[in-house]
Every structure is written in structure tokens, then in C-alpha cells.
Length: 336
Image 1 (cartoon, one colour):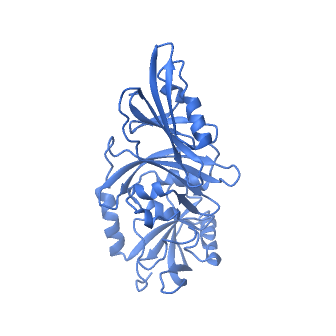
Image 2 (tube, rainbow, N blue to C red; image 1 turned 120 degrees about the vertical axis):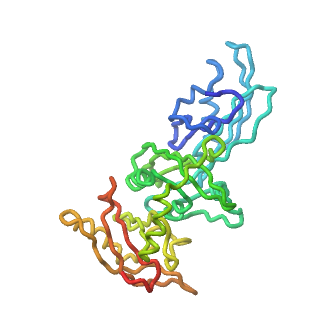
Image 3 (tube, rainbow, N blue to C red; image 1 turned 45 degrees about the vertical axis):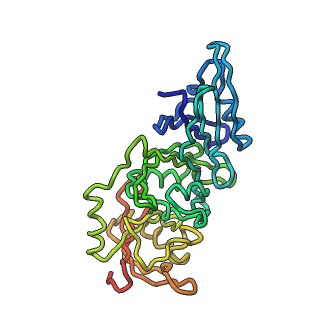
């Protein structure tokens, strides 16, 4: 591991705890902060703690009597949308050497009770959103729609929908930038159950310069065509909350699923019970369930709830007792 003259990322997603998750854009296995100390008598932990407590950058000269040498130490907080410090970028270098610009990192939060993901301006700008177009919160489905390849969505949903305090999750995500290029973001999250923090606190880190982004397989690229031929789209819902978590892979053009108050607001509140009823049925009969629900549809001048026939299918993965697949017509004229 290259220690000197590079930026390290320390996650502080749980108050009072900290681990190193990246050095120079290369991911690390939640390592001890002590490993960043350039000398036994120089503490990095104390400097990170001050940064998280104050929410302000720190610049100090560390003097090691053991090595009879000085080091330049610089920390920059990575703020989450609530102002809480999600992480700290740490520079450990020579006192006479140049400091490179800090790496691209941002903090977001998944709020389980509200079924939304809140984000900072920096998080929006990572994918090329202009500051004037920044939106402080998105639904889970809007966030997963950024990805062109994201193989660990199931484990993310498990961590977010059934949070355990301190539980760790991390994975890469290939994300499309507004200028057309694909980036590799590495994501870290920890579960929170304290106070009003039920859900996840996360860090996004652009590591494209060290690890090229993974691209969709031929099979994955063929999925949209197969669904288009069938005139259907597939949505993944959390059955217990009625939250739309993602589309596989694209949403119907008539559904209003972006810029909504909550991820629960895609299906009418009185109709969300259909997901729980389907789970109960699948306890003894795993066949598809046909039902009619009201979905939020695009409309000029206000909200419109569109009755539509959908087919519910059992989710095939480890979250089959929580997630439901909904086959939705891609246009309102398509028969189901």
C-alpha cells in the first residue's frame, strides 16, 4: 500500500467509528486507521476525530521524534445530506512535496421510513448534473437507474430494507455520466438504527482512474429487447412498504416515477396491499398473481392515478420473502 503523498478515504458512517476503505483510489478491506500513521508517534485517528467533530478541514505538521522527520497531514470532511460527516479524505505526505487535488467522493443517505435517498450537491454533480439542476432527494429507483451495471443490488436492498446498526456493505457500480462516458463508482454503506437515522448512510467514490468500469454482458444487453418485444417492463417492489426499488432495466414511458415525494408513491396507497397478499399466496402456490392497481401516471396539470393490470411474480433471489417482481405494460394500449 502506498502511504505517503496520496489521498486515503476513511469512512465515518457510524459515529465514533472509522475505517480506511480506499487509498489512492484503490479499495481496501475496512482497514484500521492506525495503518495510515507514517510513524508510531503520529496519530491519524485523533486528526480524523477532530475533522468529524468540527466538520472542517485540518492541516497540521506531524513531527516524529522516532523517525526525526516531519510530515504534512491534511484532512477534508465528506459531508452527508444532513451535515453529518460520512467520511474523511486524509493526505499523509512530505512537508515539501505538492498535494494533489482531493478525490471525487460524496455522501448520501437511504431513509427507510420515508422511502427516499437524500443527496448532497456533490453527489448530484458526480454524474454530471449541473448545480442548478440539483435535487436534494430521489427515490431508490431513481438512484439505481443511474447504473448501467450493478450486480450487487440485491444485497444493497437487503441492507437498506432490513437495516442492522453498523452492518457493512460495499460494491462497485458502473454509472453513466451526463457526457456519455461510463464511470466506476465504489460504494460503501453501514446500517443505522439510531434516532431518526433508520436506513443506510453511504459513500460514493469515483475510482474510474484505478479500476475500469464493468460493462453489461451480452445477455444483459439483450434483456431490454426481449421485454420490448413482449411490450412489458419489470419493476422490483418492496412488498412490506410498497417501495419501488428499481426497474429491470427501463421504466414504461407513461409511469411517473421520477420527481415524486417518496418511493412508495408509485402505487396508490389503497392498492399496495396486493404485494403482501401475493407473498401470502406464494407460501403455498408460487404461480403468478394477476391484479389491477392504480399507478401514478404522467399527466399535465397534476396527479393522475391510472388503473392498470399487472402480473406479480415471486422474486427468485434471497429476498423472496420481501421483494416482488411486477410485470407492467410498457404502454397503456399493450394488453396484459
